[in-house]
Length: 167
Image (cartoon, rainbow, N blue to C red; front, side, top):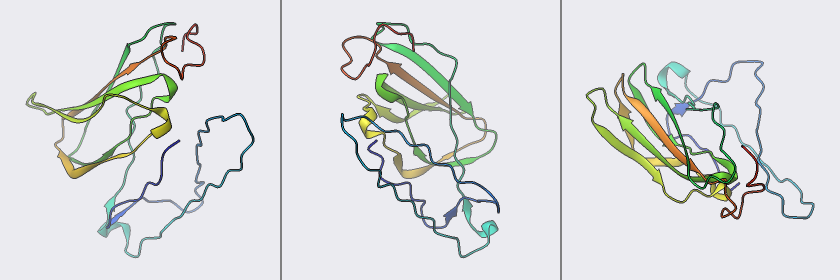
């Protein structure tokens, strides 16, 4: 919901090997009546061999081991990834569903210095945005990206379908 497009910057490509399947994962929010899906996708093929292009690689920093207790208005979840090579970071994509409350991405450099790259103080599932950095961030090998998120599983969250459930 709320996501418009995911266009790569000039000179960037993602390799799709011959015979690959492209799988789309769609999230729909019910509105109480039937509607028609008008999804469209577009693929632009690179004109140069991939070796001359920047390679776009997706990375997720999932934490699939948590359970949000019933009624908790501010449950904290963290996840982190340490980079095993120098990396050019362009975008960040918080993904938290209807109990998401806030999220922060902090880059921790090998020398311990910390820099907040993104803070979303009022997460809204209806506007799951890809945040493009104003300038790409060169992340040195050995840096860690720490994601700290809070979830609201209480009855105070008007989007929460069941505040009595562990999620």
